[in-house]
Length: 123
Image 1: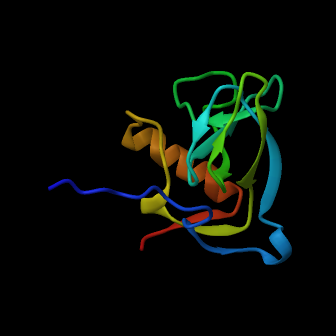
Image 2: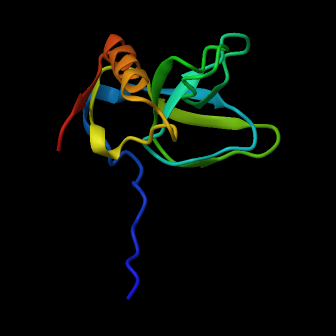
Image 3: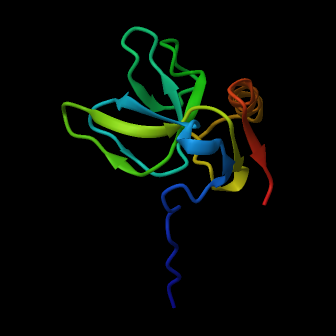
């Protein structure tokens, strides 16, 4: 017997957000990506393009800059997506972190999100 699991739905990780979608921001996403809702993202310093958080990078994407609101697949030209950029509470167990992230790196990213007033809550 196989067990099927569902991915996180659009916005499912949100506990609360600011009124009138003040928490959300439309941003440019990197090319050739498939990201699920709840993916913690970083912003490249040089061009302002968002992609999954990469703690080992040195281009800006090592810093948590928000959380992807809805799943997104981008082609070779990239595309736009919506992130939770500020003023929200999120379920920590529904966030998608980079594979291999250390406890220290995750703690740093959680602090960075808190600096944006994005607060992690346990379910």
